[in-house]
Amino acid sequence: MEALDGNAIAGTLFEYFATEMTTAPGTCAHCGTRSQIAELAVYARAPGAVVRCRHCGSVVIVLVTIRNQLHVDWSAFPMEETSGH
Amino acid sequence: MSPISRGFRGRRREHADPSRVPPGQYVTSDFPVLSAGPTPHTPPDEWSFTIDGAVAEPASWPWEEFVALPSETITVDIHCVTKWSKLDTSWRGVSLDTLLESVVTEAGYLTAWSDGGYTTNLTLDDVTGGKAWVAYEYGAEPLEAEHGGPARLLVPHLYFWKSAKWVRGLTLTPDDEPGFWEGYGYHNRGDPWLEQRYQGD
Amino acid sequence: MARAAIPGRLTWQLGRVVELVDETPRCKSLVIELPEWRGHRAGQHVDVRLTAEDGYQAERSYSIASSPGDAQLVLTVERLEDGEVSPYLTDELRPGDELELRGPIGGYFVWEPSQGGPLLLIAGGSGVVPFRAMLRRWTAGERDVPARLLYSSRTLQEVIYRTELERLAEEGAEVNLTLTRQWPADWQGHRGRVDRALLAEVTWPPQQRPLVYVCGPTAFVETVAEALVKAGHEPGRIKTERFGPTGS
Image (cartoon, rainbow over all chains, first blue to last red; front, side, top):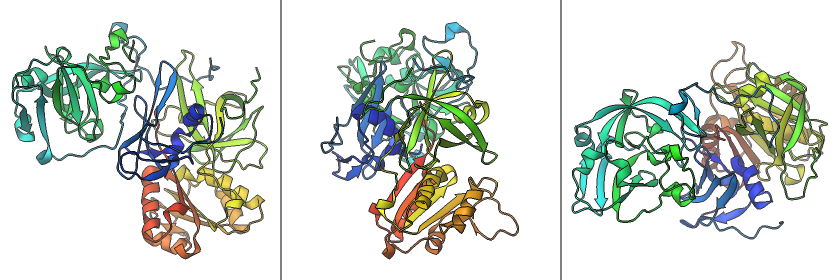
């Protein structure tokens, strides 16, 4: 299964954060590598989308839609404050 | 509600006996590959299956011993929480009843764990009495890595995210401990006939 | 029913297909009119959503092939063999049909003249689509930086926008084609996959610090990006966009 990248979930992330997120920088909580979201590895064929750090392979962001409600867990990818809404 | 896209039907649906199709599911003849991460490729000489945790003594089998265990060929329907069902899939594997005979436990739950870090939780009840296998053949062929090979858990009466690909062991636990998807809001049990997709269903 | 666009919100809109253009045996361009399209940046994409009569929905992303200056929105779709959405878009859709989409989306894989260059675009198959938008944008601008495309295709018949690429070459963009599976007997372009040797031959050296965009299937993008880094190009000046199958 080959991974895509953060561009593949750009629309969904925009929906959640109300702003463009592909250039948002964050830090992998497991290995400390800094990446923009577009640079992360995305596994979009799943009961959700799983986003992994390219450096260490750990899960950094998980997107799930539960009862038509989108949830994004980015606790393992702390990001700087984004401007906007 | 979105407007209808004229002439769009989606993936080709198979017609099926409705009594075999859980609520909210569509039947397909494809076998979509879903994954939360890269496909592991564990060679047989590095593979083993282990049952540990709340057991008197752990049990472990290297590959050669594992495939020499009594096995069964079964044909079952499988149901993915993403709404696709596939009927009459054929597998060969070792029943969890056979494997659990090798351990002594009072635990009521287990966590299945896999190469790559995936986990899912199950009750002992849901994996005993002829309901679960560790399967290493699909359609009379060795199970492909993409579909979970060399071996995957197979628990067809529950949503297929419980049938952990690349399974390497079971850790028995006194309490129910949510696995990967369960921790993100998917149901702890996942019975498709009760449509237990999400926590709280 | 018109819905007011709220800044910061990405709303689904209904477009109308006005034309379908055969690009190659496998690819079609969809020309779409939208009541509230506010323009886009070269490299961005849209999400398309299809709804069946029973409510079943499927969603896919498609790069915008039209330039920010073009009058109408154009998407170029490649029909995938086992595709669920692409065969509908290439084979079933007719002029007059409505198409639900949202966008433009993307802030990373975009190029504008202000970002400078030299601009190096490396495409595998349908990965060339966002580069058409970028090259049109480049043509419409001051052309302060040189632009170069390296486009890998299985066969000559599968080269998308061939006539336009020839015209761009005449206008000063450098277009390099490599065919990987089959080529005409008198083929003057490159042959074989994009590898380190071909990159060395065709791309600017790392000292020139090109701004590199790589787009196509995951395996292609990763092979090319790795080769570029090994050749000494700065990772920070290489942007990648991977195409591939996505679930709904």
